[in-house]
Image (cartoon, rainbow, N blue to C red):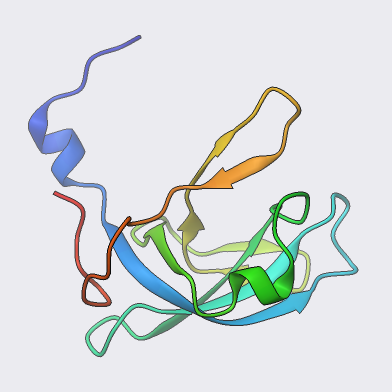
Length: 112
């Protein structure tokens, strides 16, 4: 595994958001949802798509706190302009388990 410097880590904007909308994404080649998340008053609402349909229903996700990387450049995924990367861990079967704060923190809080 390559090592990184502290400044490399500090460059990653990992922020807390709350999922406020989850929509089906029928155009996706691999099952996915369209997700909108609120990252607080300074960062606002951002959109992404995520391949998390195996373990999570739309109802499971709505209102959930998440960790997102906000400083990747926007990326078009079909009709969706992805504005953040929703973080998670891949299981052996390929299902994604979300990386989430274990307690409430303010929206937009940065992972330190």
